[in-house]
Image (tube, rainbow, N blue to C red):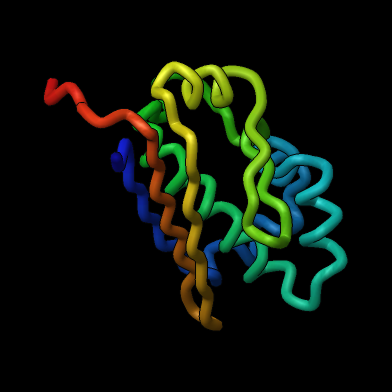
Length: 127
């Protein structure tokens, strides 16, 4: 059963100025992601793509930023597999999410992330 769907699109140019701001980078990315982004050929595009995937993930989980900033509790590896920790992992367990599907793409102008969360539950509460 689908438990959540999230999508986010980011303009890559918006991340040109942000890629040199260490505070932003260290607030949003995990150490592994920072290494992956820094070693790739397109730092700005990679940063925009990771940000969009994380935004889509938070939307699919329906936890929103009103519960706090959990960016670094979502680690996305280059194969688009997620390792969650802390409160994000707790929310995944509370919602009985057993499968994550991530799709992402980018062009020179845009980066998009899509996340679908599934559970093995057969029935879902409507409200």
